[in-house]
Image (cartoon, rainbow, N blue to C red; front, side, top):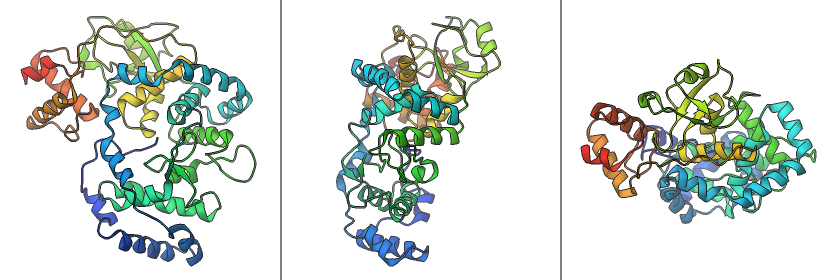
Length: 389
């Protein structure tokens, strides 16, 4: 689910206008075809790719919806992490043991990280999406919300078609154009695709080796650091300065340890590693130490809830215990979150849009207002904060 701009992107940005979008769908497709021909693609390739393309209204509806990201970390993680996924993860770790060994040697990405993505994206390949990928990409490129993201993906899919690795009428996937068992966009497949099974094609839909190796190569290219941790559950002291928590504040692990942060199980990472204390539901909820590799997750998906859940599930698959949920303060409902965002915006904070989603901008604004009002500045919005504002 690598949607680098899915969450919190405003309508009609200057970048979007520069890309060209909207208007008659037929005229838009004609423009795409002309651009492809001008780029050197033959008429046969261009016509073979675009003939039969259709606008998909369900794709636009899904793009506007995305209500799943309004769930908090505990609800979201409990809904995604099931005994079935834990069991299948363990089975696939054994089934593909040699493959994972080779991937870890070449790309430095842990099998548990890949297994977690594989589970969440498609239930290990079982549910890859049934929406025509070409139609989804052209529909989203025509829509004027994020053409700067999706227009290049149309041409990446065209290049895959030219290479024989994409069927315009038969390739299906998720509503946002991701393909295969770990759900990668065509541009990422072009850049990071691996023919791990040696059949001469990069096939992320039918080949688990291709999908897993490609996902690992992409993560490696995005900056994954071999042999280093990504997330770890910790216990934090009650006297910690909550203003120093959050993904944007880092300290050496040794410094966090001196402040009383300790591992809930096992040992903390190397003392010279930089890390952040992450409190997805405030200082009374679960607590994690997020290492540099955690930031790479945001290149796959920008939702903090999804990223934290995926990173934590990778730890569970590796043998970590169930997190201590604590007793977090009750969060806000969707309408309450929108009310909070309006109040924060009125005070000059950039919350990234009034969408009811606790994104990075809203978290920063919440923490700033909590500190100003003398509340625990843990970036977790509560009714108390809403009332004080």
